[in-house]
Image (cartoon, rainbow, N blue to C red):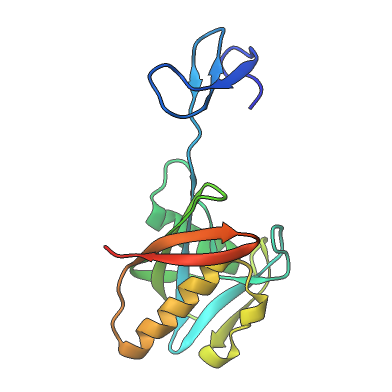
Length: 188
């Protein structure tokens, strides 16, 4: 941020007197511009023993597979965002079963919230942000072509839970270290 969105004056970047973090501050109108993580919400759409994945038509990771998910909009809940993103990216209608995973990604200032869901029908197709959408059985998932570490971890955990028939909420942090992504599970 360079300029105040209220008065257009230049901002400085320092720690306010009553805070402990650097913030963008307007010296003209004294507004502190707080920046917070973005929430990404999505679904794990399932039909029988298959999972619906979308091949990305946009950057980042154009051409790689992902679960339908995206940034939450103002005025909607995370559940509404997950359902909307599934409809936008895969033209798929789902019934949400429960919140399945919450992952913190501090290196990109994001929080991922993924919902376990059931496809209502097989009438799905690529939305504007997808090149194609496809149902995959476990042995068909293109693991080396998955777009993000969060998607890989979500699918891995989902498939493990499906084997036991017990689905639980998974939480954790995805940490980037020297270009490598590690998942650190948090117990709740």
